[in-house]
Amino acid sequence: MKDEFEVISHGAGQYKVFMVNLPYRTPHIHKDFEICLLLEGTVCLLARGREHTYEKGSLWVINPFTSHELIAKQPALILSLQISPSFFGPIFPQIENMEFSLEPHSRDAQDTDVLVPDTWASDIRASLAGMLLNIASAYFHPGDYSALRCAGLICLFFERLPRYLPCVRISEKERQLSATRARRVRKISSYIDSHYSEKLLLTDLAQELGLSMSYLSHFFKSVFGMSFQSYVMKMRCEKARQLLLLTDFSLLDISIACGFSDIKYFNQGFRRQFGCSPRQYRQHFEHEELSQQQKSMLSTQEFLSPAASRVTLEKYLPGQIRTLPTGNR
Image (tube, rainbow, N blue to C red; front, top):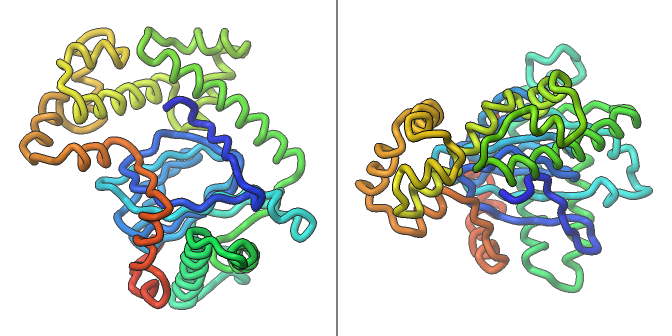
């Protein structure tokens, strides 16, 4: 995890489509909208201190400058569209100041204008999923008109999206504050990534950023949904988990490499995080006799190549999209 603030490099179209096998993604933040369609698996999304569970067929949107974390009990297959608000330019500049909810419209909404039948919401989701799959198909099959097709479908997708996910308008001041907060999160993430293997205290980070301890503590919890020490512990345990799966390092060496003060502290922290000791975790996967490729998928996100994405997409393109069940819950 070199820098969890993603600075996405777009082409001329200012958007990017990719497919990823993802068992876990550490808390991170990026500058663009990210639209996700869950093709396989179940995913838990942690954002703004809340937990959202998505099943196969679910569709959700991550707003710019929103810290979020993804957890899957088994590798999940996700189709993602990351797009800069500037893509819409003079066509729809208001999108710069829009934020989408992580949950769809429901009967529980207070505004009668957004009370929708469950079947209608499901139909809208399926329509949006179909459009996203068609965007991906055009993206991964470049041709004379593929960029035009992508652009047209993206505009239509965002025109329909508020029918499924509630959205609100934020002020320009709020948007600028979000951008400032994101820059600070980038510095925090970079600092922790560089020092997690050492003794790491909130006082060190506060001094590095020129902030008071009390302000930084409050800011950190509001962004990451947990305390500084809890985040550092979570990160160290995740690093240790990867080393347990992918290396034959001793528990002591892993403990030292991941910044734990002693083996007892390592065992206690790991057990709280994963429900078993580091030794039991390693033995479980050795017993399962997983291949190295499977272990890699369990420990790191794997981006599919364009060629692999084209083949995989064939399983889900309309009319196969109607086989994607359930959706957001």
